[in-house]
Every structure is written in structure tokens, then in C-alpha cells.
Length: 140
Image (cartoon, rainbow, N blue to C red; front, side, top):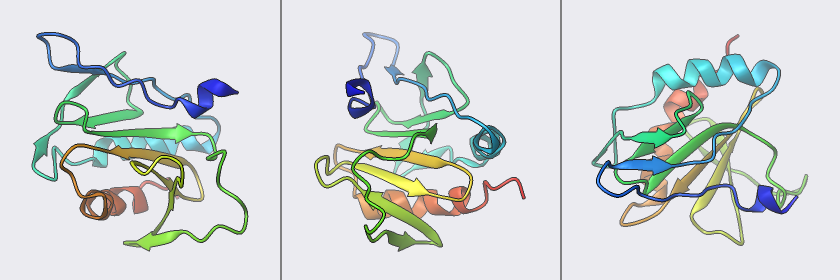
């Protein structure tokens, strides 16, 4: 589905600082894992304060004016092949989308967590900071 290729719609709404992010709909055990992750996410990430998104969703996190956005409970990345090597950061395997250099997906036993890193941010630093809470999100 083409909509899956357009995973984020990030628009800063005039005057209110709210970022538009299409929220995912986690299924099965991903629901509990993503609920847990929501409480573990940092208030500050790579110098940016946590912001708000619209529509509001416990499965979305944004920092700054949307330069960093997280969606928990997304589907498996379309471009991820079974033979792709994941980059391990802090015990979490990350898939880097070869066609979208700002898009990374954490691959866990319970849920896929998609992170977009844009602006002046260094992806490795952001992924390192997010790996700790993502590693802790398994409800087991």
C-alpha cells in the first residue's frame, strides 16, 4: 500500500507548536509494549524538548518541532529483507531504510518502532538515547 511508504506527515501547525504525525495502530502484544514505551520516553532528546502531536496518541513521540518523531507499533518495514543486517545500538537492532536516510526502525520481539531523525540531529546519538527505553519496553 502506498500509504505505508508515506509513514509520516510532519507539519508544524501555525502558532501552536503541535506536530502532525500519523499514529500507528499496534496489534497483539505490541499494544502492551508500546504502552510501556510511552512511559519510558525521555523528556529531552538530543537537546530538544518533548512536544505534542496531533492527533494525540500514546504511540507517538515528537521532540522539538518534529525534527525527531517516533511511532511505536508500526508494520514491518517494506524494504527490510530477511537477510538485511541490523545495526545494534544498546542491545536494539536498527534497520536503516536505504531509500530514506532519515528513517530508522527498531526491530524488537514485540513491536517495530519507527524513528525519523531530521534537522541538525545526529542519528547515531538519537538512536543511542532511544535504545535504552526501547530495550525495556517488552512487557515480559
